[in-house]
Amino acid sequence: MMTKKTLSVGLLANCWRSLGTFGAAILLGIVAIQAPIQAQAQVQPFPSKPVTVIYPYGVGTTLETTLRAVNAEVAKILGKPVLVENRPGANVRLGIAAIQRSPADGYVLSFTPDTVLVHQPLMDKDFHLELNKDYTPITFYIRAELIVVAHTQVPFKDIKGLIAYAKSNPGKLNAAVVPGSITELATQMLIQKAGINLTMIPYKGAGDSITALLGAQIDVMINTPLMVPHIEAGKLIGLATASKERGPILPNAPTLMEAGVPMSLYSWFGIVGPAGMPADVVETLNRAYRTVMQKPEIVAVLAKGNYVPDTSMSAADFGRLIAQEKETWKPILANTTMPK
Image (cartoon, rainbow, N blue to C red):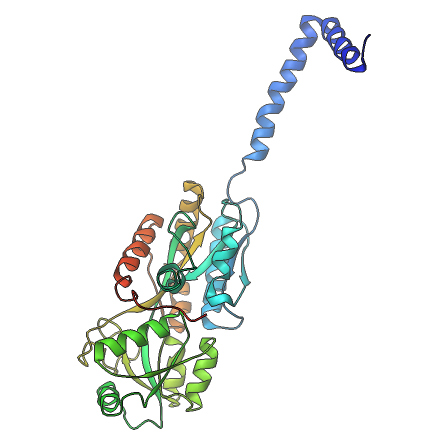
């Protein structure tokens, strides 16, 4: 008994024989022509559509303004828009979470601070994040100097005065920190290195902590150059910087090293993508960002926020920096856990 399937196969065979050698050649030629066309459609040069950079903070910060300015110039090099998408919350981890759910094609990236890539995985046993396994390093973005500040009503006017007062009045001074951020880590290091006792008061974000400091609800804080306009306006006192040497930010304020505190550190930010990105896509993005960050107009935009670019790093160099930083902080944070 002949089924529909055997009938179809038989008809197809008859059709193929009826075409003859010439017809078969035509069909094979069509297939040969279509194959490279289909392959070309599947493998398009990067980028063939807009790129999105997840920014894990709220709207309206100076840092966001600089990122949008930089991305606009990067878009000119890539020939496609480079968008910024705000996703604040979850200890600044939403950018990393986004790229872990995204294809490794370079169209979704994350603007990420050192606290997420280096410090938080060392403090939170439930937050597993491994270089190259969970994300691809693309480019170092900027570093931001750290500043020790106080409100104007404190009974001291310089960093040596803070240390002397804290030693004489252990635990009396309050320090604002954002758990899991560089503000908390730097404050912990200051307490250890200066041999003082500060009471750390946690806040959800930098904005809340700065408001508390301006309102004299908090005595001192270590933060990024976000504080400089308030210092220049006379609303806060710039006690010291955590830089290795004095620089353009608060040039009249001593470094902690000058004050006898053996510590220097800064905050930094980078751009990363999903794990397993093609090397040529990583190189394209790294080269575009490094080129833009050398433009005088972009350097000027970054300088307004007191941010310093570093265009010397390849993607591999950036990866090595992350690995080195993790080893540096591992013993320091060995007994530190993030509050839930």
